[in-house]
Length: 371
Image (cartoon, rainbow, N blue to C red; front, top):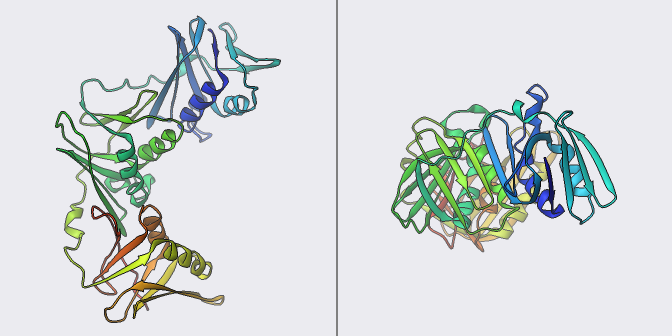
């Protein structure tokens, strides 16, 4: 194997795939490596942790075709420090040693044979294929994935529900204490549909990778048990989560007895201040709505209390309710709106948080009983 690649292109593609390599020390050593495959003036970089896999490709000058796996973290560290010059990779097939040359800098890296790298499942070609706007898909992920249950649980609510039907994309997530749901308009030119549960880990990885690219479309390819998320420069393959997602629509109140409008920035700042005195075990902040004011209060036994008051629109009877403040912050920070609407049905009922400027995104948060 012998090829030359632009330094920035090398660094970009390594950033895309490196995080998918297995991080634990008790797995196969080759899973900490990136697979390099150079042929037909194209370089494919692949990585997997045996749960999801990712492949990125770029055009390079290939003088001799070949493949090898190289340690991801060490290679990324080297690439980040190289001068802005062409980088040459040369493989000694007898020793699995790769010589990397860039200007006056030279490195020798011991690789592991590509034969030891697990065979990756190919990108789906026979599944349902739906192309949608990347910006819309990313927004929908960011507004839901944070509310999914811990991925280590491996049950259905550790994923994000995704429904595409007609010209609508609906995504939802819950961990049992909160629920997020968003509905977005899309251009579904072939009017295809799908209903799946995507692992939160896969979606978080997709969002991370998209920070390194600039593209307009993503293609979802789905069969009964697998998903491929594909753009022009990379593809992620993942298993889907099996099982019936909870009927979350039934949990969303049709109306709320009391409503408040609060400045998003004021709420975030006040919660940040008050949270300095929360009990680390419970993270409880008490909200009291009354006379167009919101009083936020936290207390920790043997440490003290904190309180902050912000203006809001609220004309109902005084209402005190408590939340895990982290759930509120997670929700409000994803909202692209000047103000936040809060819909309340009592101190023990689920509360609706949503951006004032958008009706189709909500976060439902269960309160904590105040003793």
